[in-house]
Length: 79
Length: 200
Image (cartoon, rainbow over all chains, first blue to last red; front, side, top):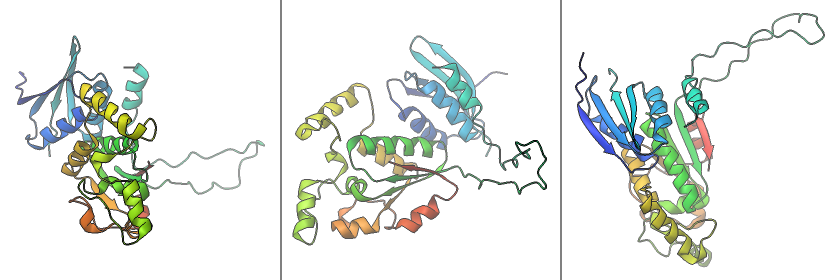
């Protein structure tokens, strides 16, 4: 199965709570099953995206780090 | 990031309803005659109620960051603004308010509006907030004003305190747009039933 990323959100440089706030806003425009790639540099976003995923039920599929950039792949839950 | 923090998040799933407390054996070794009725805590809704009673830069920022995160996590979120916590909700262009000398003096000494927040420490006649503004830009932290706009955008409800408005001589036309009708203590306690409540 290939993962077709619907959109990429560049949140590099932003501090808490903006990464999850902007992600939540972006999720409103997505359809269930859509994949959103998020790039952030805030180290606090790693636990925050895990907590956000747990709270909202939107799945955190992948979590990788490349240098100082954290990449999260999130899947919108079924309505 | 610590492994402990990750584990805490992993373990944070709240299973509802709560299981009743296990039966307790008394310390003298004899079994209790009858099981005491299990105390079931009230169900906790995924809801956050913040009572904002301070109007300084750091309190408002903390409250707004938590409110934004809470709303982003799809929790119903309310902020009840009382006493000094009400002044940030004044419009920036409102200057002297009040119907008598004391209220007018108060508004003169304590200018409202999200652009005029003072810090509770190191204010130094505005030098402290100016310094925080520089740091804020350097580290891409949102301003209190941006955080309030973002919170409203995410559906956070702001409730002004009626008593504070009356006592401080603040009128609905002095306040920013998008607020809920003024409310009182019983309303905020009802809102907070079964919710997470924070007093900031």
